[in-house]
Image 1 (cartoon, one colour):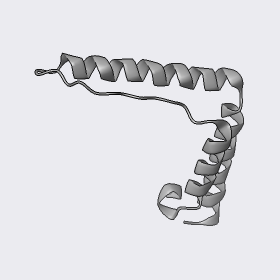
Image 2 (cartoon, rainbow, N blue to C red):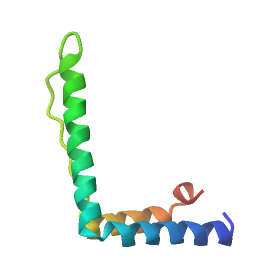
Image 3 (cartoon, rainbow, N blue to C red):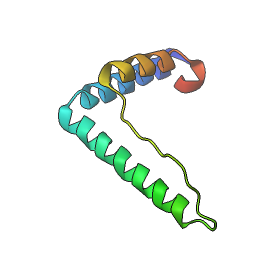
Image 4 (cartoon, rainbow, N blue to C red):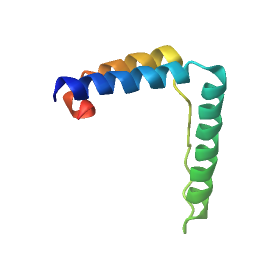
Length: 80
């Protein structure tokens, strides 16, 4: 990966983290996670035969997400 691509990746990660820091953005991700969980539960129940399963969802806390994205950004496969 060249320096330009690397810098662009870093810039995108930083921009996302700045946006995710906002309470209303984290609330939106929480709502999306809950809606997705409910949809997956409905799909599983609608199968023939129905599948009984525990479906969980949770948005990442900011500090945890920051650590994960920064770690991923050092992975060449993620950056490419």
